[in-house]
Image (cartoon, rainbow, N blue to C red; front, side):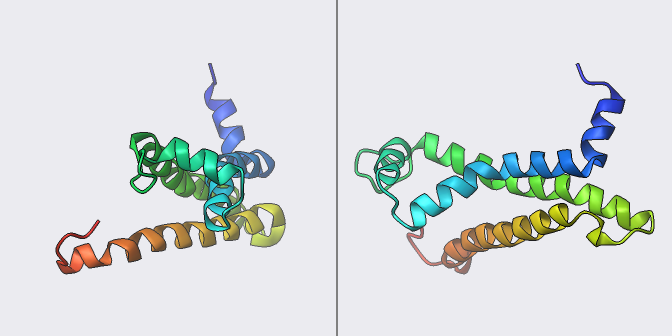
Length: 133
């Protein structure tokens, strides 16, 4: 069981924050290029695993993985941002930990792309278009 001191070290140590953020964002970072660039044989395996028999509609497992991955991105961003904010609050430069800054920017871009894609996909539903999916 972790003590309060261990939990403080996880969020204040820039190296552990970067590693935790990277691990949290890794599942979506692996699945996204496979889906976008049609990388075989992985695309066929994941398509069969995450879609129904007609290979069009996402099944429950696919929706669960998508939801978890999309929710892990903001968590990874926040965990990575904590050491940067602490350094800035202590009067240090935000560039004191360049790996954290680079990973935070990458996560923010990835987060904006992912959530932006989901929002653009649902705009017709917000506008009242009938039979939107």
